[in-house]
Image (cartoon, rainbow, N blue to C red; front, side, top):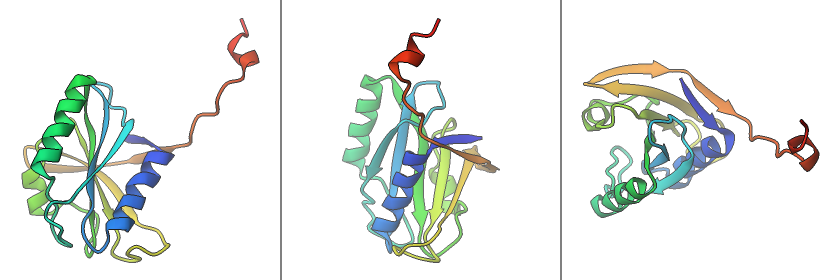
Length: 152
């Protein structure tokens, strides 16, 4: 199951809508081994295409160096589909190289970059096998007051 914060969910959806009619792509990094998507990193679709996405190789290398320096890994790899359902294509499956990552697809086919719902789905893709998983969107935590923090 993918557990993702509401603000991260909203950021992914906003990126997908903003880039429509081209596919959007990016990563949500998190502490190594934690399975916690924490740092939203929108990327440029170097293909600039409505039917295909490709991470810019220079940008991707810089991201991996940055994640390595922060002891992070890609917890979510996301991209959008602009005209089809949020299900991995054969190309998507072939490009899936992070066995621990959640592969999120957002379909903007119904409303494009206008207001309206999107299809948001998550998958595990390991050795070409696609398994859909549930997505739980968590509300932001309410900050504790000083009184709550000092309670014995």
